[in-house]
Length: 344
Ligand code: NDP
Ligand code: GDR
Image 1 (cartoon, rainbow, N blue to C red):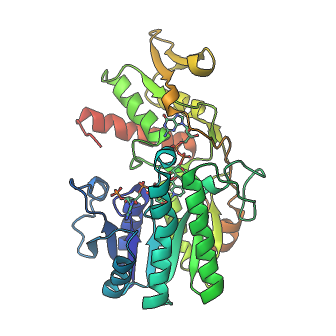
Image 2 (cartoon, rainbow, N blue to C red; image 1 turned 45 degrees about the vertical axis):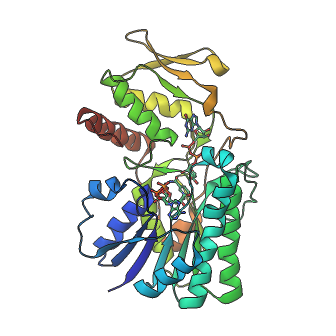
Image 3 (cartoon, rainbow, N blue to C red; image 1 turned 180 degrees about the vertical axis):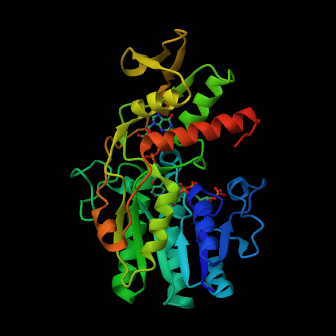
């Protein structure tokens, strides 16, 4: 039986990855942080919280001794590091916490691997945010980086440290440069889920207006469940490497707003410009979206579109779900939850 550690099992990707590894017969140690209120809604929604092969371990990525003990006690052969302060917006307000968790945190695990068992295979959750102010279109593994947020800078440090441990110590450390991936399990602070949850509330008469920041930002959005499969594949091949996972399609936040309202049976029309831009329900004439400048970021990543050709060639990985299908899946899940009074 293979044994894996997943850091960040309470997050979107951690929950899906746990589900995948359990289905493949792994023993899974999923780490969570001590918090004053328990936060297992995702693994509960997937119905895996009582699986006998799933073990929940209290752990904080910023603690080296805890990282060493985690690898000693679990005897894992694969470690998927998904834990991070992952919200770009917050990283501008908490740059040092973000550096400590998202930047230095992974080095605690890499050091623990060196100390406990250098044969452990390690996955680092790198990100398209490292491309930032993009230097080429589409972005691929060899596109130069230019991060535009404390989060992006911290992730870039961790990315290079994974490569450095690969080259210096022969550790099997692979990095997935994953573009935005979404699902019904996405946190509500991220723009897609914020939109689908608000659209559901507007449809059900529980909210009047959705407030957003920059509608012009373009993102390459894929379905999280498919990206998790790519993470696993990266640790099954012969050599550690860096892989872009993306759909090679980009749309604006405004496009996603239109798509989400459409999935709920509402047609919207945009009016005005800049901070005065609004979206109006064409059937009722009501304003259903407006701009709130507090959601603008000090520096923005304007355009992301990734080329997953390397992952296709080496891993046989490719995305399948279209953005329309993904958006509809998220709106339907949020309609169902809001009807049932679900609050996450
Ligand atoms: P989430 O924000 O949903 O989950 C992050 C996880 O990290 C949570 O379980 C969180 O725990 C945990 N965590 C935060 N701080 C610590 C800490 N100090 N010690 C231990 N655990 C901690 O992120 P996603 O699931 O969306 O993303 C997974 C990873 O992939 C992240 O590293 C993210 O930066 C990266 N990534 C994500 C992309 C995406 O589009 N989703 C794209 C590219 C990269 P808690 O619940 O307690 O907060
Ligand atoms: P991102 O995702 O920053 O790309 O990071 P997010 O969904 O937060 O933002 C996407 C784009 O939407 C714009 N935007 C808003 N964003 C939020 N959150 N809330 C708003 O109201 C809003 N209005 C407009 C943003 O400015 C941005 O341009 C995600 C995270 O999962 C990272 O951890 C991951 O590394 C990257 O994706 C790839």
